[in-house]
Image (cartoon, rainbow, N blue to C red; front, side, top):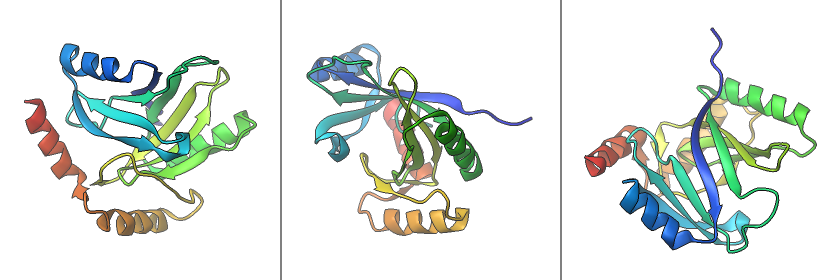
Length: 178
């Protein structure tokens, strides 16, 4: 049976960044896995939170003082199992929307981003076998071969001082969550 994309994590814009972090850490019990700023969004703050050692983040909070507009949802993310499935999702998105999907290599995942009809951000992604501190992004060519994409990402992540194998990062997060 063909596998379908799986809903995996949620990103929210918030005007109450510090209060939201405190709530999800203190009330829900999530841990902060990374934090930083997002250059493509004008340098706003972002924080990644998880309560699952197998997931870098289940929730991303993105600072936005003016949470007005068509949607306050930063992204709804769907996980796939292969670059082939990521390409297939890319083709479906390209044929269904008027704007091109953005492809980003995060080091720990290959992602494509688009908007749904209501303007909510959609991410379809595939995990890599590596982990580096987030946020991290560089464009990549989804039309390249699997081998070329893997090789280019591995070279980039191994040059990052925060490089880890994904399994090592997951084990460390499991200890933090215990």
